Every structure is written in C-alpha cells, then in structure tokens.
Image (cartoon, rainbow, N blue to C red; front, side):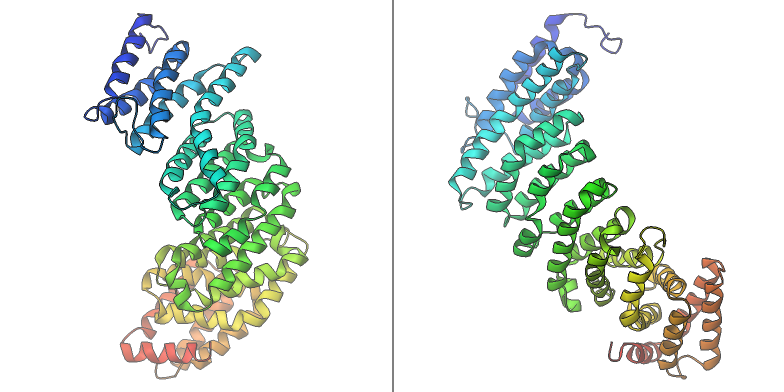
Length: 462
C-alpha cells in the first residue's frame, strides 16, 4: 500500500515510532532500534512528514542525551556514535521529504532543519567558546561528525547555502581550535566538501574567501592531507568560474608553497605519501579545471614548484602517490595550447632547466628504479614529454641514453630506441612506442649487475 502512495492506517507509523523509540532506551536493543529507525524513515519518509512532532521528540531525546558530556539518554542507555548517526540520517530523510512547492512548506522544511541543527551546534558553540582543545577532542569529534552527516544528506541547493552561511563561522573556529586533531580536521573538511558540492557555483564569493584564506597557514601548521583534498574539490567545483580565480590562486599557491617546503628528499615523500597523493591530485585538478591559475604569469612559480616536487618524488614507494605524480606529468605534457595564452611559454620555462633530469629519471624508472607495473605510465609520460619538448626533448633523450654503458645497452639498441622516439614525434601510435619501452626495460633489467650499472649511470648527479 505504501508503494502505491497510500497509508492504510495512520496510527500504524505512530505506533511503530513509539515501539522503536522505547527500544532506544535499552543498551541491549539500541543498535538494532537505531538501524530500524533509519530504515523506517528512509522507506516511509513522505508519510512521516505528518508525524514530525513525534519524530522530533525521539530525535531530541536521543541527540541531546548523546551530545552531553556523559553521552547517555534519560534512561541511562548510552548510544554508540554510529547509532546516533543513524538516528540523525533518519530524521534528515524525513526533513528532505517535506515538499517545497509553496512558501509555507519551504518554511516548514527550513524550520525542521533548524531543529535538527540546534542540539548539535549549541554544545559545539559551548566547546568552541572555551577556546581550549584539551579534554574536548572526543566530544568535538562527535559533534563535527554530526555536522558532516547533515551536509551529506541535504540535496537542496538553497538550503545548503543557508546552512553553509549559518555554520561557516563555527567550522572555521573549529578548524582553528581542533585542527591539530586529524579526525576533527577530516570531519570539518568533509562537511565543507559535501556542502560546497551541493551549493556549487551559487555559493557567495565572500563566504568562500573568508572560509579558505587561512587554509595554507593551517596546512603548514598541521600537515593534514584532507586540506589538500578539500582544495582539489574546490578547484573542480569553482575552477570554471572566473570570479573564483583570485581566491583559488591564493589558496593553491599557498598550499603548493607549504607542501614544497615539506617535501625535499625522497624520504620526505615516503614518510608522507598521503600528502603527496593529494598534492598531485590537486595539481591534476588545476590542469583540468583551472589551468589559468598556474599558466598565468603570476602562477608560473607555483607550477615550477609542483614540477620540481614531482621530479624529486617520482620514485616514491607508494603506489597511489606514484601514480598521482605520473598522472600530473601526463596532464601537464598534454595541455592544450588554447587553455591559456601563456601555456606553451610557461611550459617551456618549466621544462628548460629540468627536462634533462626528468628524462633521465623516466629512463631510470623504465630500466629498474621502480617496479615493472609502472612501465605503461612511465612510457606514456616519456612519450608525451617528447611530444611537448619536440627536438629539444629528443636531445635530452639522446644525452641520457649516451650515459648508459655499452655493456648494458649496445649502440644499436640505443639507436633503435631513438628511432622509436623520433617516430613518436611523428604521431605514431602509443602502442608502438610502448613496445620499445618494454624491450628497453627487459634488456636493462636482464640481471642485477646490468640493472645496477644502468641506474648508477642515469642517476649520477641527478
């Protein structure tokens, strides 16, 4: 009957809610009751709109008890964090089912959302007002996870914009006070990410500037990769919006400067592969969605720092981070000259001082510095570097191959590979070039002595 849009007995849901709510007050049944509450709200959300008063009685009893210092409800039962989240998600299903076809119903949805937020934000305000993280991290984390859940479950753009405006100051203050706690920082960044993905380019520019001005400074202080990931989402959402480019440039250049200072030697990359992965995800997003940020004259230094960082860390011992670096190289070398008037000029400025080193390291990777699993990625990067650098890149490749001892790679084998490189410039298929990359790899990895001699020759002084 419910599937047909009819409710056979209006008292049935009321009775069911009462039954579930009573089970929430018993430690033995509370987890099952919380899951049942969420499922009932999900399945019957349209019908439960009429029972919002009863629904909020259950919600307030649960959330108010859970968000006190002891975390117990009136009966003394203590709900786990997962149970509280399920209750919250259930209520949000019903709130979002309130129709918005007239001003009165729209006002009701907004009022109900305020009722959802109040028992979360009031204790969070109290904690932040104390201005001291010591002893409050666990409680703050619980509340911030609830805020993130709210943003995850609202798909109304107008309401999300209002909630962002309402909560942005709280989230900014929370990041200031609890930013050292990685879990708290991730919840805050997650809440902003979900909110901004829904509100999109309708978000007020003033709000965005206020929210993200301090992100580079906080990344410098706390080194949390979630700040890089959030920034990559911002680039994806707002990169096409010219009005956002100024604050996005400030955000990106600040983050790249701070990350560059943290990643100097290979051990720095190995110690923080999470930062490396998210840094180059951000870099690739910039090239895809907002290339003007780094191809403009003022962005050239940011690109140079990214490029230098990528060259230094391209042998990192972490699969995802390694692939993120190779993806950055590929996108950089395949950038369309139409994306920005300065794109080819800036790319040349970046490649000229470092192209030879990169070519040697790409060959070193192909011939043994990294696992064979990366051969296709390295081959693609080398091919696109050759296409981007043209005859200058061919000279880099020649100088690099000359370094390899003849006992490891004969002159004929070097000449064959150079021929394949020249053909790549002529537009031959990537598959053909990759076949030569595989052959070069096999020859130079045929035994440990050969592999080590090739690596020593290519990486000397690099």
